[in-house]
Image 1 (cartoon, protein in one colour):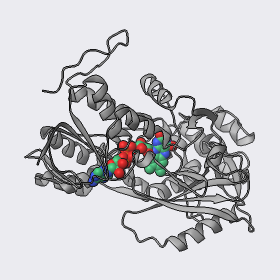
Image 2 (image 1 turned 180 degrees about the horizontal axis):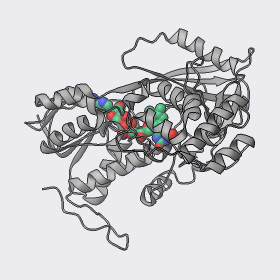
Image 3 (image 1 turned 30 degrees about the horizontal axis):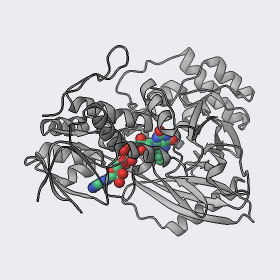
Length: 454
Ligand SMILES: Cc1cc2nc3c(=O)[nH]c(=O)nc-3n(C[C@H](O)[C@H](O)[C@H](O)COP(=O)(O)OP(=O)(O)OC[C@H]3O[C@@H](n4cnc5c(N)ncnc54)[C@H](O)[C@@H]3O)c2cc1C
């Protein structure tokens, strides 16, 4: 028998859970169903427990900026959260320099420091305008100069994005790449500058249980999520979905949170222009190796960027420094991130050997270190590539989906670069749109009464 719901939500990650939570809160009469293919909530914001360690999908740290998002997330975490001052670094030319590279070149070989400072000063004293529509590479050159681009921005970002930077736009980076003042660049080339730059000077993280505790708490408020239910096909004209374990579900409105490109692969009918847009959407995969090491306090850092090609990874972090309670006593836990083009064949044994050799080469691991645990957590669709085709393709797809009553939200449904707080807010805003209200609170912050969907 076909089941009927007002809102069918594809995916029980933070975006899907937040949509359901806000629908439930704002309009108890609206019926909804969250279908999640895995057996637990959280998607990418989930954790895995193994050998006494809790491993996330690489680092998942909470950067809270929005008053509503912050209040909700802290309320969900209760007393199981603490705040840490960021300790993030870059390892290149055999030395550690503080993040961000552009403000902290002290300690690098003199020629590298000279390249970076002189190049940056040219952007200040002989500035070339930064017109809209520049490639990311050209933007780096004009914003930070030749040296900083050559020694960090270009190699690091090409390693992460697996894409030539002259094909990428600047849309994704927003506040993520701060431009320091000339005096800060100069000071940071001479001294260890302990000043914080950028959007994430501090972050929050759960004390116990890894980041999984956040979606677990949200799912508990949602109350009912259909796990082990994979969406196989969506008929956009009939407004039906075929879901394993549930059969056919008829919906009034659909909220997609699975990767937009993949969703367009199981949705029909689609006009040729939307199929072409889908084919133009690009992404990269991240292969995340998590390890537990039988040695305490291997590093006092939170995470380190590796721009050089001799290291197969672009970033590595120390999860046990986010909270000592997620690793056994006397041990350190780490995540290491490698970026690859989608569908590239990966020889995990070989890659793991390369990673461990790299960690030894930079002195993080010692030759006698014993691994207590290791787990690969691949993220097939990790970063949406902001090339020049991305935004027109997303616009074409979203316009069509909107005309079929579909919202596509979250980091992957929205086909964008975003983070957990924004994802939770995406779900709230989506619930508000579905209920026909732009704002759900009055000027005093009290919930407005909302009309049910029908
Ligand atoms: C390497 C990396 C590091 C990150 N670090 C941070 C960080 O430090 N801080 C931060 O705030 N954010 C971070 N993020 C971003 C954060 O992970 C996302 O913003 C957020 O988790 C996205 O949630 P989502 O619900 O949009 O997507 P997802 O978590 O991907 O949820 C989608 C859900 O849909 C389910 N699904 C997929 N296909 C189907 C199907 N056919 N049927 C049923 N269910 C399906 C999936 O199983 C999943 O549960 C990071 C992301 C990456 C890739």
